[in-house]
Image (cartoon, rainbow over all chains, first blue to last red; front, side, top):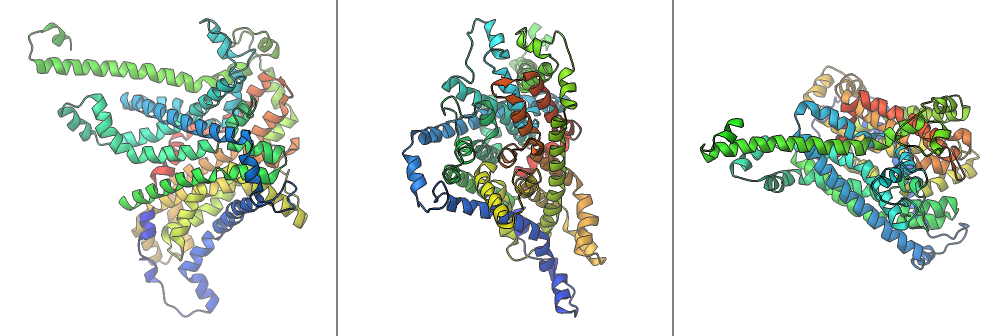
Length: 312
Length: 303
């Protein structure tokens, strides 16, 4: 896409040079028409994305009733609270672990799907992508019911193996595990589909050449598949890192941050403080802490997207 | 293969070939085995929704085998589909999604056309900006957006908060950037000769868009539409923040706030509601899987 953006204007050079009245000419002009066509988009982004984004910087410097300027007071307050550091730690654990497992499972499953005869692949792919299709709020409810302490289907099944009732959402560590499990369940199909698409684009000759050179399956993955998929792995991981880091639905429904704030991540804690606790400035300050990591990921994605665009 | 196992004196090369095809067979078996495991893992929650939705509340609380329905009943479905409240949620969700899809297409298709084909000052920057906007998550914007709309209400007297149609303003921030981005990709892949020919034949820019670009990029358009629909149908955070009255809620929020009463979970109805809420995206997916996947992969591979 970016390659088009870089190309000089070729079509526009053939503009008809006719005498018209000023306004009509301006409307006929290609750049004016193009500007008008993008105007709704520009207005939307400016008013409902950029303005709120900068507005939250302003909000973060106000006191709870939003009448007094407190500078960095909200941040100072946050830094002194243990819960804040707990949330930072949990957000990082949550995002990194979940993305790692999603990428790993997606990679493995993509290989299995790629392995079987092409005719059956569609069916399997269709089944494996279902978690991604169901709205996460709906599927998390099903997980919540699977995890239910008294009538839990999981604990019922595990009891046959002599494994005692597990407090899936009741105990801090188990709750963290459950939240990550549901996130992996939801996100792994996305990786699977992306990897599968890129696996298909690796030329078969490379594997043949590797096989002739006596490469075993591990060497084939390490020296052929991974280098060929490097770009897509990087981009998918960064994408997923952003989405997972900013996740709200799953944690909110499964544990609502409990037990004792031990599963809160930035989004859910910001919601708890800003909307439920109606301390909007403090909530805005909390969610602003997501910006640095999102920005870093975004820069890398953008670099990659532009690079790929120029290569194409 | 069998000849290889019998003929021990065969040259090593043949043995190796035989073992390779045996490896293949085992690899295939392992693949099917693990794929079955993963498929079970993937389909477990939706199947469990279905199983639970067919149970009466008496059976759920009887703590019998949770994986099996002993006395299947449709009472949960009847209960929900005759409840005005639930139908209202469904209607709100449908209205919001349909309007958002329309708005998204009206904004993003012309914009993508302009950005892909008509160079103008700052167009490259704008295309990058659109992509960056797509990377801004909802959980970053919900607090300032809430405040912005609250203030808008104070200044103009038009109260938008706690009305379902406030979502029509907010959802496009999620759908438009991505749809524009993938449409730019699809439009850019259309050969330049096609629109040059149209221009030479005297077509205006608008005609080029409607007569050539939209028909040719129809698969992309369908993929973008599906994306916009599924995003607006599934969105949970914004409706949770912006709507509170029960008659203004959309499906996901409605199920969670009304069917869970305090600590009492009416699981039969919750699972039925969740299944009905998951049905529209699943049905679309079942019929238009290829477009769905095209849209999914286009985000990162196109452009």
